[in-house]
Image (cartoon, rainbow, N blue to C red; front, top):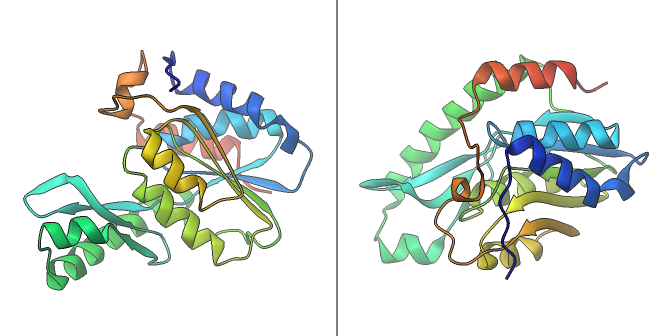
Length: 215
């Protein structure tokens, strides 16, 4: 078990960048999950001299408990579900269909707000480093990486400051490399491992992407 506290997302990003410096100068792209992942990813992209972009998966919350993730949907419609939890909560297909429809609308809104109408870059034959400020269930990260896999990247790496051990283990099996700085127990929320975990605003995301716009 590894535990640590991060001053803020920027410090976490610099610490991750140190672990990823072997990718500097390679054909890699840094992809952030907004909003909290963007300040982390911006530090990595700056150190690696890499392009920074985003994908914006959204959590699918449980009926009567939207904070409990039963899955997530990615920008291209890729859906991942916690089948065991769906069955345990007896979540019907009609609820899932409507939740996916609603969250895909929010995905499209965020992608357009942060990126405009520019098409996503091709990930084919690239090393793609997907970044968030931490993972809890990991379903948004899972939806993002499975969507990106469809574009046949050469290598997929996830880079996050903190995640619970079971989530870290599960996601590590999905990628070529997982850089996770801390896997503490007990784990209640990502924010408990940051001194400063203020919300990231839309304006901050847009400004960071503006200065790290893909070439």
